[in-house]
Image (cartoon, rainbow over all chains, first blue to last red; front, side):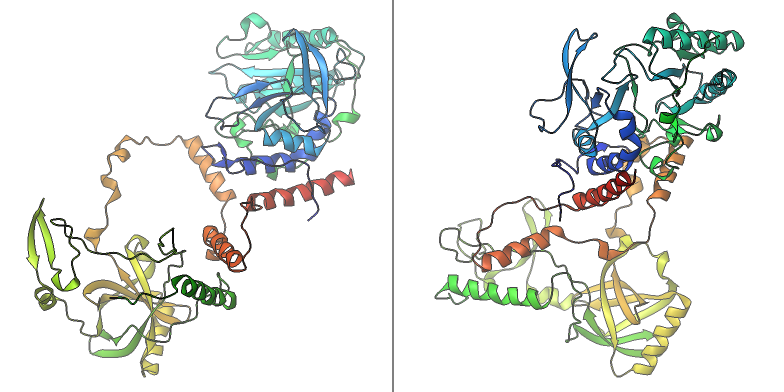
Length: 286
Length: 290
């Protein structure tokens, strides 16, 4: 048989999600199947990973720096990290083999920055992170998401929604690469404040993030060096949930993050965000 | 006493060769040919009706079995009974059976005494009632035998047909060798088969385990998720999907050794990798289209 991948697999029968008995083989298979959907989002972005080689119930770790002894075909970029205050050798995933290799490292979560490696100060997404603080629920986040969509629609901006895979929702507005993070952050913050005035459930100031029973519209992720979990990345949860793009028309208050898992996502329609890369928009914050 | 083979090494090799031929003509995972000699003859008795039958073994445990050899000269080893008092080797003629009543205290029996109370095989499978086969939990199933007509074609055929049509099994008892068993007779693949059962008191009631007392009721959401997973993974049961891979590998090693090949320990391509490659092929196809 022709060799399909440069990756040599290891520990395929290791159980990574013990509650669901999901083995590493099944996990890698998931990323292989989702590769066509994920690769466009991964392309040219320095990645941050969370790796759980012993399974999600055991100790895991963040990984920015490419590991020692990695194959020479894996593409990397040496960049200065402001948070780490040193140069970091980031992994860039522009092909299936690299994605499979990441999966074989038990990189459960793959996080991407909102800008690409060639112009790190110019984001190509404005990013709203809707984070419900209990007892506020996913349903509350959905309610606020629809309010936000209405606002964005009024501005003539197309937005795209995905589950975070944990408690909340992520809303993306693809933008032309001409704004700075400061500008996208101000835009997201301004809309958060408008929502707050409109609905008492919403908080949009960083100091209020942990206010109970509120939905925090987090604008702070629109910054250099901050990342967002990649669409279709798995999350480190017992249910093996997935950060899942959905059509606005399919978003319901009664949905739960646990409706979107390694098992169910493979069955979903493949392209709710089909035109996101053809839709670079100008922000006209009023 | 066994005769000592003069060239045990050579003889072993010849034996091994024979069994290798056997596996070659009868591929390891193929169906087993029916046995030609019945292990028991008698009749299925329902009230005054008798259906003469022959009983054949149907279950074979085909694990890999090894013989113990002496490492230094490859001679087979055998067991001896050693008296714990003086370490003398004891011949069969001096062996008695003892039932341990308390530590080190035995009630002693000679073989004749035990033979006298042995249940008599009365050559009958005595049927007392008819039940739904699936109402008997498989935990009670012990072993299964094929029942064949013994010059009783018509009666056998009638019993087979009626059990098949009604989905019933005949429940009764049978004595095989020295032991009486509860038993079921039911229709399986166009034949009557007999399944011996375990006694109720030989099966532990798991509800008595104290671990079960600590269980909490699952949350509704968890239950829903679990249901979803089960629905996703539901399918028809096919016994042929299961194979003893250890046995297959050992048999392959035996073949290699016979051909004089040296065996290097290599990682065989796993089932899992095959699955991954199939998924990858599909993904590569999709990416090409783009």
